[in-house]
Amino acid sequence: MVLRTPVVVAVALVVPGLLSAQNPKEAVTANVVAHAAAYEAMAMHIWDLAEMGYEEHQSSGALQAHLAENGFSVDAGVAGMPTAFVASYGSGDPVIGILAEFDALPGLGQDRFPNRSPIPGKAAGHACGHNLFGVGSMAAALAVKAWLEESGRPGTIRLFGTPAEEGGGGKIYMSRAGLFADVDAMLEWHASDHNDASPSSTLANISVKFRFTGVSAHAARAPERGRSALDGVEAMNFMANLMREHVPQETRIHYVITNGGLAPNVVPDAAEVYYYLRHPDAPVVRTLLDRLIAASEGAAQGTGTEVTHEIVNGVYNILPNTTMARVMHANLVTVGGVEYDASERRFAELMYATLPAGVLPIESAAIVQPFDPSPPTSMASSDVGDVSWVVPTTGLNTATYVPGVVSHTWQAAAVSGTSIGTKGMLVAAKTVARSAVDFFLDPGLVAAARAEFEERRGAGSYVPFVGDRDPPLDYRRTSGN
Image (cartoon, rainbow, N blue to C red):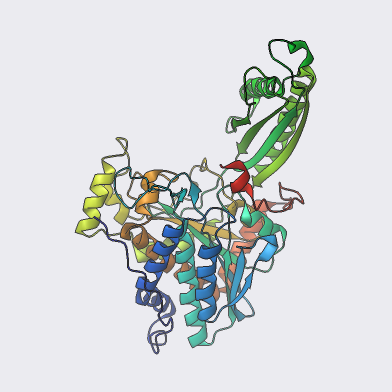
């Protein structure tokens, strides 16, 4: 069985003479290795906490405290979000940013075992590996800071603590607040079942709640007096399903009825349906929303009800940056993949037996996937997309999961709390730190990344889908999804 790392985090992050004796990229790699035990312990601590979006007070606080103790200036509670922060070291150009996440998912309180083992009373779990994401990004930032400090080079390294990626859209509000405006290049990574730095994109996504209001009545004795809000929801859903034949092929439409009434013998005077609309291009999502709003209004008119809507969240598609991705890929190849020891291999084999046939072989965890300049668009969505429309951005995936495991599953939650997960995290930390060094040392790379960014974005400007609404700080408490 894979053992969790003991919680021991108090270490010094600058080893005298370590950085000056090596070339910069080897120096930052060595720095990550020198403090790996501390990072592994903190990742396991955040795994244990498993705090959901906008409620990550201890998780965010642990990262902030560690950064402040090691020379970063930390600005907490930014963009109206108590758990968001910006940690900076250095001054002047270039400004290289790194994204960090730390929120967990509801309903996945899985133990660190390769079989389904819910933890009684545990409401959430790190089934997307964000306990690893936040700490791995911090490790990269600290390694770069140590190099800048000892070398005396100009430039700024900045770590962005971004809450509530899972449906709360923390990066949207940070983008809207202009926190990324002076960043020259943004680096990020994510937990995965393979190692890859190709420049992939995602789907833009708007999530919106439609609330219908009717008139209650006794469903048997006086149905003529009632106007069913649930009828409005069902009529809307019927029209939305008819839309599916007449939308662009890549569109995804999904919904759940979050309130359909309480008793069959009472005509419901309130009902709610919650929709997601996705497409690879943000402007298309806007047109789909207009059509869906029109469907809701038609449903209300036809059922004698009234309807309002609220945009809960909305993220842009990621703008890939091939210039930056090539830099990240080259460093990932040098760092290499994830090598299992005997106990990790046994854990992986037991978990592998729970997966469908035909998934990636276990051995692929040690392999770096070939660079693909035009990979398929991911069917997922992320608020990294909003960042990528503001500043040149690239990321990578590392094999923190057993190959074949997908995010948002009990398997992902389990392995994110083991040494398999932290090994993948350290691969990411080394790769991100080395890539940051490349951008500090080569102004031409920064300029080329900016030129590609401007070309891909075109003449359009970034206008958040959420408009001027405040961050939904209570969304986990009110929606439960």
